[in-house]
Image: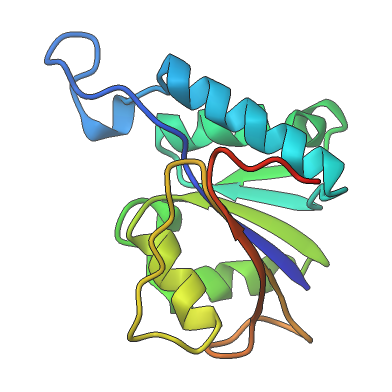
Length: 163
């Protein structure tokens, strides 16, 4: 199984008017550019997941749709999961993945959760991998993911350009 873990792209701050809560924060222009750049890199790397799971927050949903438009245009599987909101726990995320049991999956979430999840999967749970906004980590597993069973194939930031 391959798991691509993505931190959402750059988002606008709350402003007390149209953006009242953290949930409502949309991507900034910079964030839109970051997501489109990641999409290009993933296309060159020939990575298109069977399933995309996203936190229900607006910025993660927008990042998902910009990075994986093919998932939406080909009626592939996209799911918003409330368990992926800020504060997500690695064990819960693995349980969600097991529900779908895909060959490849992308998760779009928030820091520090995505960094903690990647660290936990590769057996470095005391560490915290810092992922930039719209950064991504690809992990591979023999079977379903569990703590310490993942191999980190690559970790990239938003300026990444696949060969």
